[in-house]
Amino acid sequence: MTDTPPDRLSINPRSPHFNQPVLERGIGIRFKGAERTDVEEYSISEGWIRVGLGKKVDRKGQPLTIKLTGPVEAYFQTPAEGEAVPAEDAGAEDVKVEDDKADGAA
Image 1 (tube, rainbow, N blue to C red):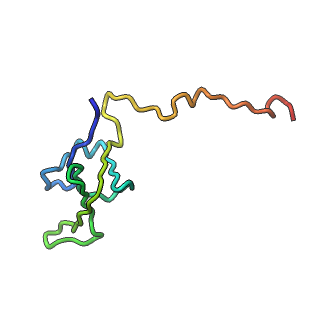
Image 2 (image 1 turned 180 degrees about the vertical axis):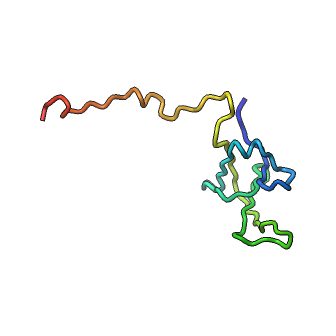
């Protein structure tokens, strides 16, 4: 079974798509091939993200957001408990670099 993030997620506690355990684990968003860290809400199936407009707020004090459309990829930043961490540099510790000067051949 693969570990996939939810199709839709929001960081706003008032949203029905808010999920605290998933947010604590860490979600990364790639939008149109670029890493985004300012995403407030996303939907993979509908292909959009919602980002804040600076410090602007509406009359109820909620941040103003804009919806951007395009390909969205979501991924977990930390593995689930009990899963092995993928080894990107497998075998890199076993490589020994020989130094010619260490043998005294100068």
